[in-house]
Image (cartoon, rainbow, N blue to C red):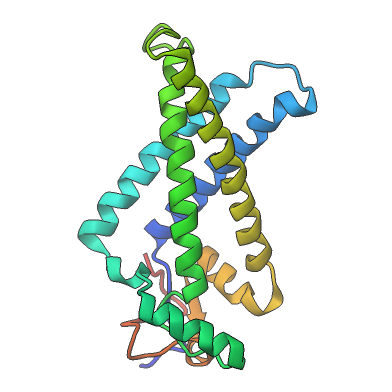
Length: 212
């Protein structure tokens, strides 16, 4: 029997998304502590959240390479030029699973998120952890200064992108995407209105069954 629900996100992908969200909230919250004048030992929470985020990203990258369609996130120059022209005409074409805006957001978040993450992992050598003692002299002070600048700048841009993501996720016309990240599905009407069936090989899901 044909269902009126189409699977958009499997359970494992939703768990990854919300796991990332939790670590990002922890990172943003602890990063703001010195600015807000909150005095407690926030550093362990910050670096542990960063390590967990790194593990999640590595796992997601491996899964994307071997189990998912990497091209679903690709934005070619020809497609981008056509999209700009369509935007000027106010006639955006239907796309595959992810819109051009979503794919561009994914690329920006990946770039600045990785910059903040890599520099943050390098900075771990400057603090004591249960696994090693700090070594602030591993790199020259000028190099550390460069790493701190890249980390701070990337983090600010990254957090701004996340706030933009939350804003669009809460807009009324985009709430069905947010629901799909919670429940896993969109309706057939939402699919037909926003997506090209020839560009997204979707699967149907029954209302009574899990899509895991």
